[in-house]
Amino acid sequence: MPEERTPHFIEQIIEQDIASGKWGGAGDPSVVTTRFPPEPNGYLHVGHTKSICLNFGLAKKYGGRCFLRFDDTNPAREEREYIEAIQEDIRWLGFEWGGKALHASEYFGWMYELALDLIDKGGAYVCELSGEQVRETRGMPTEPGKPSPYRDREPAESRDLFERMKAGKFPDGSRTLRARIDMAHPNLNMRDPVMYRILRKSHPHVGDEWCVYPMYDWAHGLEDSKEGITHSLCTLEFENHRPLYDWFIDAINEGRGEGREEKIHHGQQIEFAKLQLTHVLLSKRNLLAMVQEGHVRGWDDPRMHTIRGMRRRGWTPRSIRAFCDEVGVTKYNSLIDFGRLENAVREHLNKAAPRRMGVLRPLKVVIENYPEGKVEMMRAVNNPEDENAGTREVPFSREFFIEREDFMEDAPKKYFRLKPGGEVRLRYAYWVTCVGFEKDESGEVTLLRCTYDPQTQGGEAPPADADGKQRKVKGTLHWVSAEHAVDAEVRLFDRLFKAEQPGKKTGDFRDDLNPDSMEVVAAKIEPGLGFEAASDEPEWDDGIRRFQLERHGYFCVDPDSTENTLVLNRTVGLRDSWARVKEH
Ligand code: ATP
Ligand code: MG
Image (cartoon, rainbow, N blue to C red; front, side):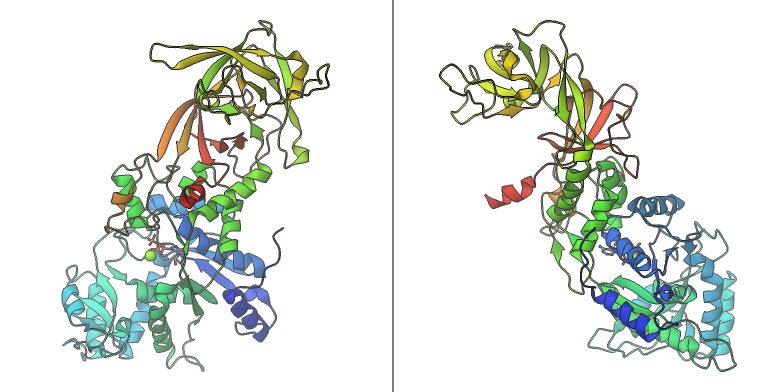
């Protein structure tokens, strides 16, 4: 269990509100109601995980509720495909919402009635300026805007026009409904913002019912109100929209209550700093471009920092949650090193992933004095970090593979792996000495010849010689028996972007793409890592098989695997190689 940390500023607000009974039932934490409100216009990315963990996490912590609500007010960019995917991704992260997912579009009728109510009170009017004219007359922060010539139109006339807008009597873009607030307000969001526009576009959730669609700023606060959200958490860029959300609800509630129509719920918006990470793109729009332009193989490409990409890469939900908890919740923007997220997954996998041996770039070795046809089962430790993980047997025979880079013909003195005449330990097997090698025409080494010392079984040191001298070896190599090896296509990944902030220098993230972000190798993996999970493998909540290949990092089985090809993805290396590179 993680240590109990001090509550962050949002938790402090919530705890005060529970104590004071601000949202009902003083001392009753179950009144806490939050929501995660994605717009279904793309797949969720690692930035969203912060908001998901925060909103669902708070509801869990206090025993309140968190809704999943699709903020589907803009049919121009939204699709059904995303609605399904978003739900899957949140569940994979480990969160549930009671009942059905909610849709802002289901409140369109209610919002429309409220808009009529606001028109009747003189709080909104139908404007006939074009979108461009509305923008041009808004003014500058230091300079007041110009009131629309339609601003003082009678409420009855606006009501009639708005009803006809809804009935489809006017062409797209010809009229808007605008709030009547203050064209000289220092906050530009308050200068008679547009509430509705005419748009003939079928909606992915409610079909062709509507041809007027609410703008985000009008809709968002009402969605929270409808659902009784007590703490409406959003990122900092919405701070200067808050006065507008408050204005809308106050304006609606004016004259309500006390025997008349009921007031609508008015929750509290609280802003927090976005999760910003180095080396990644955190924008659905840019991620879409990555897919459409073919820089990656799809939304779930293991190099993408979409939730599905991270899932396919082998990331664990628990490590993402732990990371979100560790970075905390503040009001200050900061850029977080991607290495911290990688450390979180390393930390989890180090404890939980079984160790296996695999050779990524194989070089064959023959032991000349080992009997042909003999197979010995060597006992190997499954996870030194977890004594309950036990041991397994790995077959050893006369021919096996080692890593190409573990042999050097002209080795420097401090090279402790194999070299002509040199001796090394094969992990869990024997000590072997290189007595010769073969090369092809290009000069590449194709085969090593070795002898083994039968007295070193299990990798143990041999007895001392007659003079009491103990032979020593410095290098330990991993290996895979040639006749037992499983072939695997292994995908090794590097960062998708070379720059810490992709596109910062030139304005185009494409300029920072890393052309070598994926390398595919034909590897040899120890048996038992085939298609059926071995009985000693741990069960992962999401059914994805993960393990460590000793000396190479953490890997998972990719869904591209077929009956004939095992495909593995490297989730992360054993150490933060980027941190090392930076030090030099
Ligand atoms: P994008 O810019 O990628 O399209 P968005 O904010 O427009 O992201 P939404 O679907 O509106 O995407 O986001 C759903 C929720 O996730 C919002 O409440 C938003 O504030 C939050 N969110 C988005 N990005 C981040 C981030 N980097 N850190 C924390 N929360 C985020
Ligand atoms: Mg958005």
